[in-house]
Length: 125
Image (tube, rainbow, N blue to C red; front, side, top):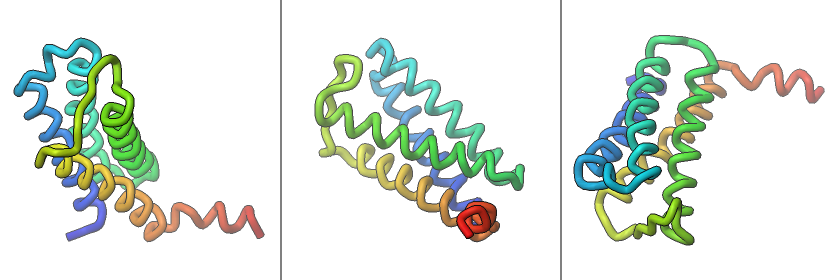
């Protein structure tokens, strides 16, 4: 299985968890509910792009999706996000967090394997 497919699966898992939570009541939580819909759509679109388009752009989007979604969750567990406070004590919190970490790591690994950082190394020399 290609590394990009693993990244796409990570985005799909994150999107699926957010869709599950949206149907489970997050849809009624104002801004956070709306952002969950954005996450679902973005995760699905990015998953397709990562597999179908051999550019650095989908990898950048994959890393951004993983990092920002995980950061938003950490903010929601520590101080609250748009008035919503949550915890780490559920299976879906851990599943989403792991998928988002995988998304970031895989995006960086795929970019490195495809030589996307070569121009940075040349500029440094």
